[in-house]
Structures are given as structure tokens and as C-alpha cells.
Length: 221
Image (cartoon, rainbow, N blue to C red; front, top):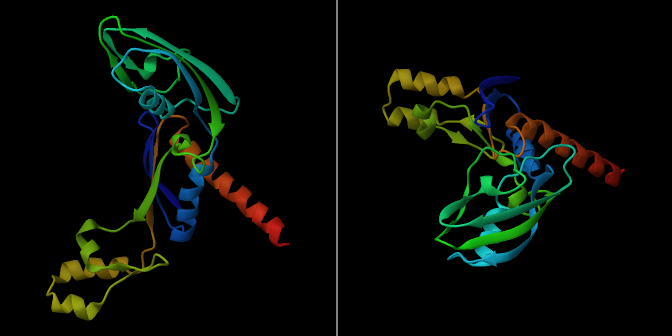
């Protein structure tokens, strides 16, 4: 069962309620780091008059989200800017095609920054710059009752009724707590960095998990 509670494509956010097990939800979450994503892998700085070291600028550019599609395998970029100005990710040519205007460095008057970069596909299990976004889940539990319940290693929600009576909580709150004991619903959340849509992250993570399970099945036969 999946019930969409938020699907903001422009903001890159997707949230839904599901009755999948926490084991499966965690497997999908981890598999998001096995989705091929485009990021700058090699960079050559030919001129840098800014206050930042080459290594810092390289690190910042490496973390800029680059639009990723099925045809993207390798893309080359250039950046040539003369100050005074703030250099943004939108100054990179050709465009990285993501909506974020990420600051890279500030240039004073007559300072220059010139570089060439090459982006390639990679996976988040290799380096976090290839991460497609933030994927997380939590139990779909009313915040009011969170302090009175426990969640075991298998994700099952429980409580000690005798302890609750000792705390002298209201009958209304006790009723809410008893109601969630049988609930195994999770709230699954995805926030895309912009390389691919949030919905694609979910679907491609499932594909990656399926491929890994198939490979494992072949190994143990």
C-alpha cells in the first residue's frame, strides 16, 4: 500500500505512507546510492586569483548537482569569469541544467577564475558527490505519543501498559497509544538534489535493489 501525501515536483520532494516493512524500506533507502548519477570527476584550473585554494574550488564544483538522464555518460564544462562578482554554478557552460544557483567563490576587481571540468556517471557508494538526494523514513506515529512507545529492531511498535498507568496519562492519550500498537505504517520521504526527479530516485532504487538480489541469487545457486 502506498498513499501519496506530498508530490512537489518543482521542489524535488516526494512523501508517502506505506505498509512496507522497515527492512525493505531501509534496503530501498540504501539502494538510492547505487543509482548512476552525473558529477564532476576531473577538473583543471588554469587561472585562480581568488582567495580560495584550488582544492576548495574543486571540492565545491564536484558537489554541484548536474542533470542526469539516460543518454548522459560524459560531459565537459568550462568556467571563465572576471571579477568583481560572485561566481555561481549558473556561470558554468554549458548549463548543468539544475535549478540551484550555488555560490562557488567571490572574485574582487580584476580577479579571474578559469577552468575546464569533465563530469562522469558514478554511484554514491563510491563518493557522496554522486548521491541523488536525501532518502529517509520514519514510523507514521502521532508526535504526541512518541515518548510513550518503543520500536524494536524489526520495526514493531510497542508499549508497557503498566508503566503507562503509573505515569497517569489521560484516557484519551492512552487510547491513541493503544491504537498505534497494531500500526506498521511508515512515512517514506525523498528529497532530490536535482539530478533526477524524486519519483525516479524511488523507482531506480528499487531497480538497483532488484539487480543486486538477482546477482546474489546467481551466486548462491
